[in-house]
Structure formats: C-alpha cells, structure tokens
Length: 218
Ligand code: BG6
Ligand code: MG
Image 1 (tube, rainbow, N blue to C red):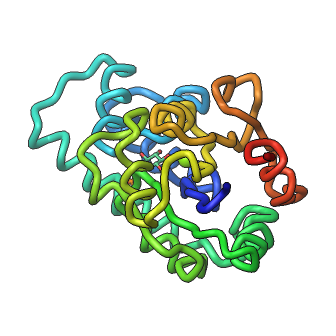
Image 2 (cartoon, helix red, strand yellow):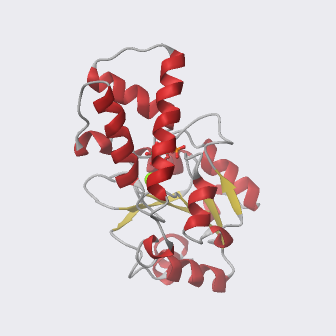
C-alpha cells in the first residue's frame, strides 16, 4: 500500500527554474555567450557543478576547477538574491492542498532534491513543516538519475521503495525514481516525461484516491 510520497522541490513544489535561468544566463553572458530557454531545460534536476559543466560545453569554454568553483559561487549568490522575491504565494497550484490530504491520510512526506538550497527555499515559501525528512544536494554522493536520493528518502521514512510515489518534473528525476523501484508521477509535459508511470500538469485536480487506484489497488 502507499506509505510515503517523495517530492522533488524545483519545478514540483515551486517554480525556481526561472531564477536558476536568470543567474546561469548571467554566468554564460559573462563568458561571452548566451544561454537559451531550451538549453536551460537541460539543467533541470542536475546538480550545480554538473549544470556549469553543461553550460561551459554549450559555450565551448574550458576552465580550471578554481575558476569553476568561483563561477558557481557567484551564480548561487545571485540565485539566492533572486529567490528573495519568493513568498508562500509562489507554491505551485494545488501542492499545499494535496499535501494536506496526504497528512490527513497519514501518508508520510519527504523531499528528494538535488539543490543545496532546499531548506532555505522551503522556509521562504513556508513549506518546511510538511516534510518529515529532507534529502538534498548536501547529502547525496550521486545525482539523479541515480536512485540514491530517493532510496535515502525511503530509508529515512522507514518505508520500502515499492510503498513510495515520487513526484518529479525532470527526466533525470523520473529515471532516478524508476531505478529505485518506485512509482514516478511526472509533473509537466507527458511527451517529455515519457518514462513516468503517470503525468499530471498540475497538482490542482490530483486526488489521492486516483493514485491509490492507479498503483495500489488490490
Ligand atoms: C535542482 C534544479 O533541483 O537543483 C537544478 O532542478 C539545480 O536546476 C539543482 O541546478 C542544484 O541546485 P542548487 O540550488 O544546489 O544550485
Ligand atoms: Mg525539479
């Protein structure tokens, strides 16, 4: 039966991709090239340093580690500065209501995010209290699509992978959930999230009963 839900943060609970994009675009421009919206899509679910490597490959730029760490640090300062505009109103439609329904049903909730800023963001949007456990970029050694992040989450919540449903907006995140033996619900475009067990465009109309019927019917 369904015992726990694991949530990605960026693009699932709140739309931070726009701020990551502004900050990374400034990094690219400082190096003399542009970063398109489509290229930014490639960075979803990918760790900060891996994202920088992808951006540098796009611009055909090679840098030493020290310079890369410096660029990533500057980017993160800018990202956090942009995130200060966020308020609890920025929680994506239906997320709070859905989490309330999980809480009432006694289903555990945890976070599985590649971000090292996860707690800061969750506090800003006042969503920290919903999550019993947090697995973030500070804890993992292998990024998505490796299942480590979600397996750690299941272990922290003391449930089995097959008792978990993962909510993800990134292809790499859906792959991580599936590789961990969990059900994956994609949040976004079904033509992109083809490996997900089910795709929703928003949490607005998502009923817990639907999930129970889809995946856990006897
Ligand atoms: C993921 C985002 O959740 O976190 C990525 O989708 C981001 O775009 C990654 O690069 C790491 O985030 P942070 O906050 O540690 O730079
Ligand atoms: Mg995401």
